[in-house]
Length: 344
Length: 295
Ligand SMILES: Nc1ncnc2c1ncn2[C@@H]1O[C@H](COP(=O)(O)OP(=O)(O)O)[C@@H](O)[C@H]1O
Ligand SMILES: [Mg+2]
Image 1 (cartoon, helix red, strand yellow):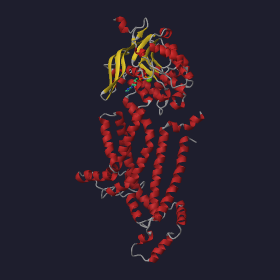
Image 2 (cartoon, each protein chain N blue to C red; image 1 turned 45 degrees about the vertical axis):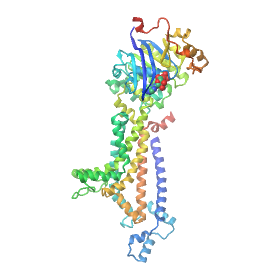
Image 3 (cartoon, each protein chain N blue to C red; image 1 turned 90 degrees about the vertical axis):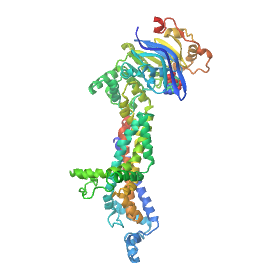
């Protein structure tokens, strides 16, 4: 078995264990919090008989451990339970709202990588000269301001005072959502050849994705800068210079890739953190993502839905980690070739 | 006789805030074409900075102050250090203490080698680069050059990496090779083997070498001439036979009398420094600097 595959399987096994742990934790926490979900779901006018019936139907009178047993049994059948709030299966709700969040987060993640890495790389290359000072100032400002504050600032500036971008939503009024394939409007529009819908979706994504990405961009730039400055001190960079490698090539290749290995894991965490930040940014831009659903079900103590939402987010964290591990093992030949070396 | 390296009254200081730490106090030395010249001195005496100045790198950094003259393969590196940019890796190359850390860990030997062959903007096709690299690796007696090119530095032994480094250093047929304590990070036998290999190749190709070393017995075996440096001053200069048979400067004598007690001939840490170490430069007969002879 290739070392990369083995590493991946190992991480996958750990991920499953972590998910089980998270499910137990959130399952019990959600149930210990005071309040009767059945009473909240049925409203103030419901009779005690109705409430009792609902509690019985949802096994809420069973001991908590038995309830967890029911939950696992359903889970193994791919059933995350039913929301008391929307009355629909939780899995279906999540499938409805989550793609919007994921699309936003992925675009923000792409911005974080595409802008943060070059900014950090340039700062390191021109260390203590003006590009460095500018990059560092921008990074600090970006990092220190929470994403939802960026959301408000961007919305005020570029959608209200100077209205070049839309205030809110995923598409303009009058434009229909593209047929559901992935749930990402940009991709679904392209798959359907609806170019104007695609641009409209991108147009709506720019402000919220930027708001969400800014602190990640700053964080990425700072990390990349410090890691590259460290790399620049290593003997192999001295060798590159002694042998006349162009400074630009060193910056893009010979110092960049070794510096990326130690930073990627942290970048992965930063990326995953955007999922949490997305909740507030979505509120600002009235983005129909998981956040509104998540907040609503928490307020209503909608047990199955809470567990479902938390599990999806935990799974996203784990998948991100897995992807990062995979990328690191591809970039870092020491991991990729670990086994071959042992055999040689 | 033409000199590939000519240094005259070279001083170097590092500015830190308002103060300047003077590191070289007006040294003069030269390396003629085809000659192997050693620069010997304790750590911190200014050997590596001399090599970095000869590459034209240090004087381009901020906070370095230089005066005097330094001429390498015909370029005036005090006034035009940037003239060295296309020469590095070609007319002047370098070998390092620890070959394994001098080779980039995330690139294959072949990729690094190609970059070496292309440095200074030279156009070399991928096929041509591989071909030349294979030949160069065969020359340093690497058993399976193709496999070495496809390996990462950490997959090869230190000795193999040093051979790779020597191959890279000589692949572009340089006029001057700067060897800064080459292979001191390797174990003694491997170090001796690779040095002998380097010696054979530079002798065969007629490459000039500035050989910076800690190791007196290696210097004795390898160098034609020796400069002894003490705290940024050259204190003694002579042919290798002259210097070892008749060391005249108190510092050189102290070094030589302490050395035999050490296995491998590494430079001893002198327990005490006498004022006599600051005595003026002693030049052995027939060894002056070129400008002094012609003047
Ligand atoms: N970039 C630098 N900035 C300040 N001081 C330096 C720098 N490089 C070298 N030095 C100082 O110059 C002196 C000579 O260093 P070096 O040439 O590396 O010694 P060595 O003879 O061991 O090779 C040392 O005292 C060192 O601390
Ligand atoms: Mg040194």
